[in-house]
Length: 297
Image (cartoon, rainbow, N blue to C red):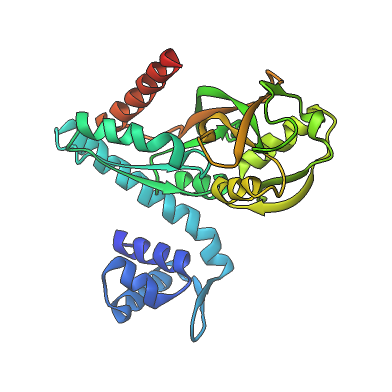
């Protein structure tokens, strides 16, 4: 069994297609197919059901996939650890972040980090929590910025900060001049919220439930930008975290009058993940940046 065979197997499992898998691994499709056949022959089991346009894992392939991913992840981490010990740090970090954090929190952070660590390459993968956790588990991202709590014995979670929630009203709304607002005061308003799958949706709904409010949801979006555009047009009200508060024509942001109406933002890593010097530097920078911003606010 060869490592490249495991990589090819993983690529086909992820893409569901031999041609796309070959392209992702930078080999020809016949070569990749031949190596998969050799792997199947060695294991004594068929790993894929082959169809004209796709490939599906068999029960044997499904059972073998997490083991192959674990081997590849461990080999990658061992290589990284040896390079670190030898002083050959490549300085590549992949950070995952949910859409309600990535565009608000990361730009200034990564810009200042790049000035201090110009040899470190940081890339960001933005997705919803379940997909980020999947990628964290199989080693495709090094760390993730998520809303807590996140459960899993194989994960280590560190809370970075909490932020209050804000109601967003049309600028001419009857309550737009208030300093704070209780959610029950807008119980009859149409609500505009994030779609299912976005964890902040649960933060917003939980805040409503604490106020005995069952929101009437009339519009759902995958981004705050779409929701704020609808609020400014007078289509309803919404709830956003503090980092999404901005100067926007037609919108008024008012803090929710409930100190428990907040979300916790944290850093999540695999428990057995080996952190490189570059990763530790980014984590330290993240914490320091937040301390400075908290002191200024």
